[in-house]
Length: 462
Picture 1 (cartoon, rainbow, N blue to C red):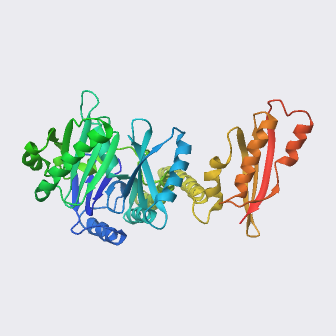
Picture 2 (cartoon, helix red, strand yellow):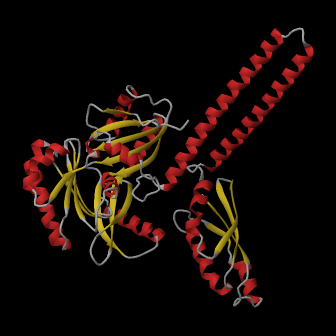
């Protein structure tokens, strides 16, 4: 049986929890109070658990939008994805509008006709960490924490258009209205967050803002808006009331009338997209924790099975007291089954111990170091063995490896790696440099030839 799938739409304080079953049936619960911070999130999940059974656990995806979440558009030069993430991290550190660490994600957006654009999403790290922790307390495994803008962009790709359209999508909520201007392929031009409800009482202001948005697109991008699309439970009524006040075709999303629309759309998205507030390392940690929990439950199942087999043996002895040959055969078969289950249990314990060793946290320096080793080792160098041991309250590190390039050229790469180990966050004190053995290769006349050469770097860090 497949695991249950859950979805949360946490948008401008409105918190709706949905259970999307494998049979196609869905149940949901709208929390009775605004959810605006970590404390109210914990109360909201407690209320949900009283109405929807969460004890079986499962994965959960989250569509999020709130005043704490900020957007920033800017142009970026063409670069590799790894370099882009480093570039964006510097942007985050420089521009975050709040204190403390920032969680961030991004997706492509059209910034100008000349350059590539990025829509960067910023959110306090404590919000993401607390959301993950609270979900796990209710046996839920967070897979995706995605901004509303990215959900809208994914939905636009499902629309059928002839040619390259410019589309104004208006997402209607009880407390806010969000306008997302996109191309027909889902590429975002810009986003507007309006401080009023998109339902009947907000329609005069909504008409003004939609027409202003259409004019701005024409002035800023020299493109005409082809269509306005409304998404929301009241979208059909709003469309009828403002139809004659908008200068272009205005429609509403039929699927968007469903109260579970945002949850269903989000549940169908992939988790490896760039617009995910849960970083890759955290997702790996969550997966390891989930595997650990499965191992624990499997161990309990094996114990129960063993007890059942033991009870079966005793019952067999009682029922067949006079037939010794038959009893011996049955007991032998059941004892072999017990040995098999004990072997499986032993393997489970080994896997659990391996998970404990590999789990990256603040007290497990080897796991953190190995996870980031790929960022330290330059291209052209290969790590063959990484040995990390704790002795006298110091982590002794020895890295051995090979290079395939020209010896004189690889000196720069080796020196770059050694300098990276000396700097933050590792601050390693080098006790054995690569230079000691490397100079032997140079003096032997191998500097201008391509050959596999070994190197060793050793040191310690606290």
